[in-house]
Length: 268
Ligand code: PGA
Image (cartoon, rainbow, N blue to C red; front, side):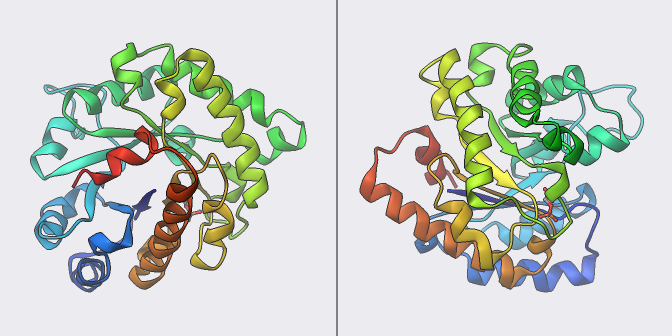
């Protein structure tokens, strides 16, 4: 299981010390989960230093579509990699909505991430209106296809997808395990139709994930982890979510084969 905290535009140098310290102490190898925190760019050095002796991975919430040059205000994947980053969220719905990001740019960002050794976590998800109109599967599989179509097979095989229904993000209204599984199964079917390799793509659920309800989500067959926003700001809550994920992974290991969905988790 992969549990990724997305701090969004939160934190400050003083507050981060306690949060990172708590994660460093609370997340150990025995949790059986790959935990990651995606922090704002200015806190990368602080985060790298605080977590370097721990199994917690570091990631960013975005990267540039470009590798270097005259792109004022942008941060490249190469720069993130210099700070020990191994993960990059791309195409989060907040960036799609506020920065008008479309599939062309999101795929370029995923490419940049792969080139510099970061695992791109590509976010997809429907609005409440789209769900109400019965268009969820269509919207989400189109978003996934548009990214796949713009990448090489080798790049595709590095991706992680995060299904984040927009109506569940920051609203306290998480999808139920069943609702998440329905959409994950659609994404899995699409990936499987492309290749048996892609069928093993890790799929995360995101949207108001909290410790109390995490086992319902993690118990689903096609859920391989979570992308956690608000609850990742509370280090103890985040650790509880990781504990739940670790328990779900143990249960799954007893019942099924381990493939890329689980194997990459052993990476530091
Ligand atoms: P949330 O955010 O957990 O606060 O709903 C999830 C996300 O946007 O990644």
